[in-house]
Length: 417
Image (cartoon, rainbow, N blue to C red; front, side):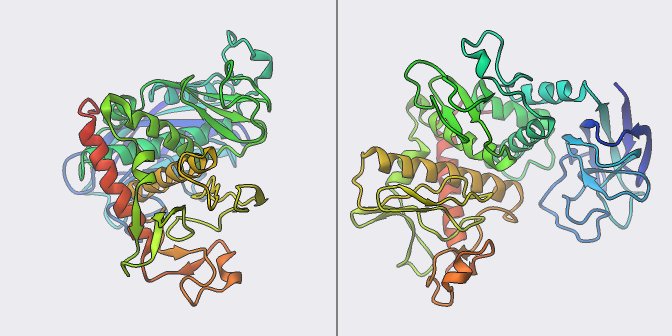
């Protein structure tokens, strides 16, 4: 496998590697660089410093970036990046710095793989998180192996990105302010302690996980089977980094209840969270009702359900993966349990990206509820942009779960890097 060491002082270094258009390309990177003095930033860069003068303004400061051909369109690489190559040409790489590269120190070490073996190295990188995936979708020993569905390279690349963002957020919450100076290995180590060992399976619709498992027979959706230690992706479900982070939210919820801890679900079920007016509920207990709420998410609008939870209009957005909603249903009813459970996973998803991007993504101060705020019309509420909500419901969601995540870590002293 070709390797290359990037000196942080060199802007757009020629790796000497020629990329073939359309072939799977996987690049992994390690090491650390310093934009002023001393290596302190890993290849994923830091979201703490947002600088529009970097050579790739949409990517994190000091992240490893690349382009194919000297005049090609730049893209982010980070610690691990996979994509079917969009073009042919020489691979150039750089630290995402700006005006002055001469004062940079340190280096990034790259391993570059293309073609048939790229997916194998992508799977190896995913395994560093203690996550097992099989190229065919299932282990050959699975009794229902005939129901497998082979992974695409693009799907596995999305799995890796979801793992990376989740690991980064967990690390920043456990060790605030140190994410810029840590190695990627430490973030993966903490992720392994928090999440344990599990599989992600890719299957056909109707796959049977195990006798009596609640995920059995799912169609075109993702389902987390805590009992079997697996996340299962069925049929034509869109496999995105956000799908993965949402399912990791279900898995984290279970892990948070271990060793006598209070689960994130239990915290959600009993919460009453208000916006900065102090009177309007963002989510949680509302009299005898529990409300998921349509304000403060990172994207919207949500799917529409009737009062019994029957789907009317399906809308899946990046930060509202499953907005299952019921009304007038008592605590303990399976429909209420599902509503709180899905809201918990979406809250975790939003929190991951809010922390990992320093509040750029996830938990926006937006509303997707017509008439709230009063200036939000029905037409506006049904758009991706929603309406600006000066009562800051996104802040309310973020502040609540960020506090809860800190308390959960305090209840789990073995969750260390």
